[in-house]
Amino acid sequence: MTSHRMSELMYDSIDATGIPGSAAVVAGYGDGKYLWPSSWWDLFPAAVHLVIVVSAAHAGDVLDVEDGDATPAEVPGWVRRFNRPSRRRPTIYCNRVTWPRVVAALEAAGLSAAAVDWWAATLDGTQDVAGAVAVQYEDLGPYDVSVIHDPTWAGGHMVPTSQLGDDLLVLVHHLTQFWCFGPVDPTGQQDFVNTVRAGVGVNTIADGWMTLPQAQAWQAAIARLVADDEKLTHLQTGAPGVDPVQLQASLAQLAKDVQQVLVDLQAAAGNQAL
Image (tube, rainbow, N blue to C red; front, side, top):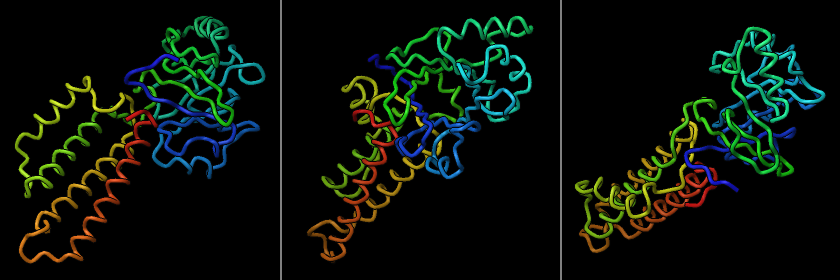
């Protein structure tokens, strides 16, 4: 399977309960027999939501053009009626065979392929399709997986996860200085980050994209850890007036927060290898 740098995965399904809760982008149905109830959208509060419609008579973010759903001939009318303030332009979902027919219908109506974004369906493992902003390449049973090549298409202000790697390194530098030397001196922090980044090959964790809410959640977790670290600066073992019970409680809380941040990072990075 091709490895894509600076790309995000999107999940879609006729049943949202099977989609990973850490998904940054989810696509579900806004009409038809697989209409998603609101409770399914609520399963992904931090994700970008894309509404698929199978009928050109209905409003949505994506028009599903395939046998039994919308037809290429219906695309121009749906495009002209498109009114989704959060989307940059209409998106058409179809396979590689159908796409030329969609383009022909658009051109016959005085439009062009540039009037829409194309979410291509391959489902054979192919992830690179010329002209597609996203490619649905695999059916895993409970859900389908797509790779997003253009993060601006997904919307929701996507953030590169390499920024999270820098956050983590700042934290490591912070904690290491405390445990080794006591009160933290931020001097050399950026040098430390740059050195480690260079040593591991540019990025500190696998490149990917996450939504702004996910990035904010991660940054808040980092802030909690830094705050815990600072609270411990006067509780080092052997320091005058140290309360052993308070020290143990503080260390236990720090360990708990570290574990939670690692969980958050794994989810934010789309379960990519750290």
